[in-house]
Image 1 (cartoon, one colour):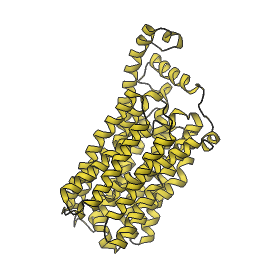
Image 2 (cartoon, rainbow, N blue to C red; image 1 turned 90 degrees about the vertical axis):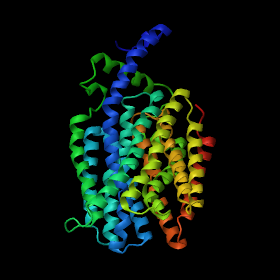
Image 3 (spheres, rainbow, N blue to C red; image 1 turned 120 degrees about the horizontal axis):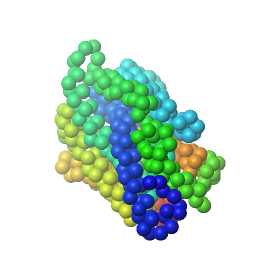
Image 4 (cartoon, rainbow, N blue to C red; image 1 turned 135 degrees about the vertical axis):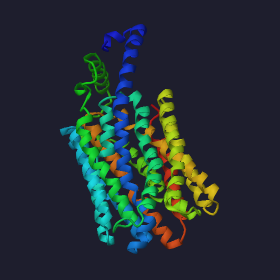
Length: 437
């Protein structure tokens, strides 16, 4: 049964149309989301495994904390420069080719990290990794707008963005296992094996993209014609609604895009902190052994996964976005401050870090439902990429500032307070500048 405007003229007709649509959206979600989550888990692991490699790599290569902070963060410079072009290219040539290209190239760059010998080569490869991964996350956010209407996007984004937390939950133990198990194997160090073994799956997954992902509902062989028409008509009606912006120029001149970029900058600063520094924080509170550090580092991400799913579903259920975002970033602020204050107490520090992860990760799915409310078409492609690219500059600023502050003060606390202040700014911007509806 296909959906049509006339069929929705009465409540009874609307209910009869909604039932098969609900089944269709569930079918789409089960087909797309697990695979997209898998891809992002690979991307995230290849992006942040340097945080685990750091535990041994810095000593082997005689790198300072400041060198590591700059190398970890320079990834986001390349990411920033190439993200908007990548998403505009996706809109032009399609998601399959774009996502496959991105996945294969970041896998190759990750494997090459095994052969870093100098700070310069470290910086270059991290920069290239950022270039190659640029466009993946905003590309998926845009891709999901081809399938799901606005009122379903917070929960769908939440399901996809569980990949952040899943990557943190599984990435730590896997990294710890590789570094423990590959110690002394062959002529490579354990951190070199980490980059190689975690880069190979990404290359293989890039070829799987071409076989698995359809471009849009009309290309999905696993949907019936009625289901394709129903989904397409709902999205067409939504995109023709008044108040939508369609050109890239519209996106660049809309103040709400820049407010969203500023908010996202603050949110990402927290995410980069727990991604790149959680192993170091856990080591600093007294945990010994790579495997143990990896296992314990999964705890904050597991809690963050549950918070992310709940916040996305509850936001869609209530139709409320602002407070769901602002309260989450406020919780992140409190958790980061508490982590900095309790580094001398392992239990309290881990609980505080977990609270910070809950707030940071819960903010993501609700935040990404906001730009889609006023952007469509090329404006959505460019605007989402612009927000993400500017926001992800925090991935450069936060690790670098934490590394520099730790080098100068000898403690992680001052860096954590700096990031906590950014999370507080995010709460303020959302409450003051984002519309209630």
